[in-house]
Length: 585
Image (tube, rainbow, N blue to C red):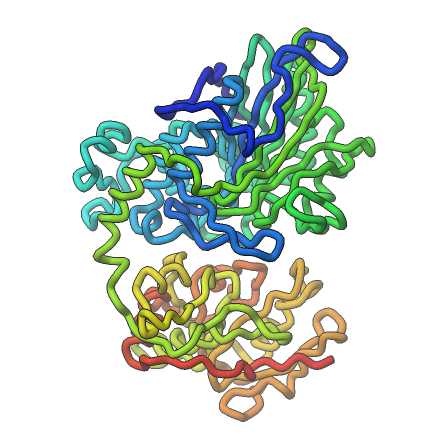
């Protein structure tokens, strides 16, 4: 069965201490009662974020116009939302996905319950599910909505930590994890068994008798980006087709204003609010959308834009994205005809979540509480480095950080006890931060920093592949072979394994088999080799289906444990010059 929900007008901020908005921060909002042609109108403010990823604390600086800007943090985000709401009591707060998943330790160590509680305090209305919401599978995502303690992790202190929270926060969030007060939306995610959607397909907000429909959905390629086993009973359908099929459903209910919240995006040019030369999936999706869609709030690509793209009728529709980690917020004004409910005008601006604003006290305390609970784990020193290990790849796609992680995984699984691996493969997308050298810390690396680099909690899996299968695996790194990567997706490899690829080669013929070597010797097509990778790739994640053909699979230890062991045995570590992968012209 298809689901929908209706939420009545939000009259004011759910946070305490609302104040008048600063004219220096915002452009002039529309008159809430009169349109440009003098007709009665309703001005609604839509406040949007995307790709928050559990960043309760202020994350790293945001680069704007080539300069670093301090921005973000849940308490300061709440302060900006408070002022935006004060500018117009007719408002709605939405997210375009990836609220949770790939989160810093302060949230991830407690199964992202702190982020859900923070968004409850913030007064979030809707979150369109993103791919990272599915990182731990459907059942854990459903728990995020419905509440309840994690069945395995409560006794370990990683779920339902109400006893460790201050009385102020405990009184607000409850004695047990209650789940999200807001609604997850997933219009294009269907349960194969029941035939219905996993979550409601849309939500409705009503202002002065006029309704706005919010359709929420994730990118159709989500199964390629998460562990396939966690979503095996789910079907992810085409984004534009899903939206277009729902337009007449909303119209039949008298809903003339339609907003799409979609966890998919693009890569623009032209500054923080421009879409000059935009590339990526969002342009193609919008180009197929029904003209009745009035606004698209996007995410996934961690980019910044607020511009107009052509829809199926060639008409411009406003499309926004607010970068990531709560460092920007999209301030969107939607003006409705008071008589018909149709959208008269749309305008948007992305605002920096600066820290020169009074942070929200409740959010400040929540972050302090979970920071205190996390501190003993976060501050433990795991090793030392002598220089920065960067995940930025060279022209061949190899990075110093990738070399380090692949070497750690190989060493952890060399013994027969853990699988007897000879080669390690690591996905670049699984590395979420650099190991940055800090002279003041004498190169010491904390567990928190290690977790920030590898936050997914993946398990290493050893398996057997033939030399021919390894060659086919390497070809799967490039577009068109056989699943069609969207761009080059180079796997990081362990020491002793090397190969060359030809940038001008044809699909499925970019890697010279003679260049694939292990220990200086060419691999043989018919010979078997033990390899190790994380369980995301082992399940065929990122389109690497060749891993699913591996024989004699064996689960080993956690990938983060392998990295910590490597630091313990080899510190201080010095980055080398990546030369394992060679790119030919």
